[in-house]
Length: 445
Image (cartoon, rainbow, N blue to C red; front, side, top):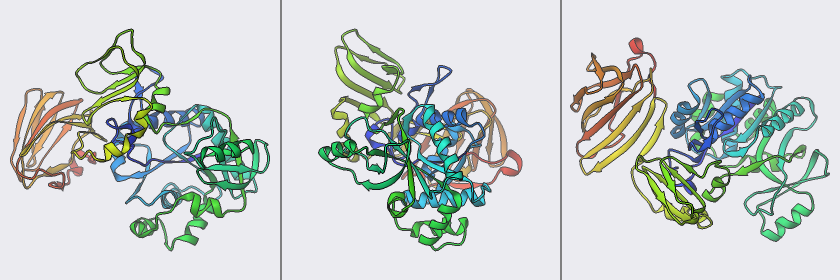
């Protein structure tokens, strides 16, 4: 089974746990199989592997999410990076070119495309597996999964099947309707469009070349920024006369708001949280080291992270986006492939950061033109490289790194260090990178 997972969006409706770098699919709030917390992307990846251990999984995403993906899923997962945002059709076209040329997938093999962030059970991927088998042997050009509606939603498009059979030809598509229209569609047997598309790889490559003038994967990647923004539904689905849809009756939830997310959390609190017995329908997620105490609250969601704190009535939390759009601040937390960082303090000419490195990982070998840095190792052990000189770095080691100095640290064990940046105009752009691969292996971005 070949699956392309579309991972996009900033997830501002789940602020303060999500932001422009950390999207909702990377928030670890679901109890995992071994008692740990896992994110949406980890949960879905695990479910796919349980259904088909040999599945080829490719995540189509932006540069800003690559580090978080490798942090949570490991280095072996395939990632097709979009140079910029161009909606779902260009993203799928690029990912299919990637499958053909980089992963050597045959044009006759079926490929499934689905979003990375619905809340589903394993039967969802069992259905996708069945749909890929139909696509390989069936006569239709394109196969969709239609979700059995549980209420007359105004958020989703609707698929109108010709019959009530498990798999049916599609007669029409309907845009996101008003409530009364949605009720009428459901009475006619309509299904939610859950964004699942299945096709033979060659079919999509043909469509891509017909709509985009490009030679190969490298050429498409180089010209990506010039492409028109267009969804897969508009570019392909609504123009294809030969489509079949499979009905899906299992659990499928779009966790786009705090209200829906708390419905499937499994636990009422995550992190250092206390609630008295008078709290009703209260969910709290605390990523800070300080405790949160809730007393006598009803129908409330509380979320705390280095980005900020949210205290909201659950129903009102659906209207968070315009308020979050007005919040402008530096990103305070991010997961990277080598670990993570948390901003502890921001001043006019200084920045204090807690850096956590995973065992065996390292930072870029780099220098800064406009700032000095001081690193204090809090825990763990590794090797610091400063202007090509190696220094054993362990708890208590202090490294002073003036502007222009080349530096990195390679973690032998897990490491935690405090980095203090000093200078005017501190910026992420003030970084010049150097190679250390010959001696220390590939860097971790």
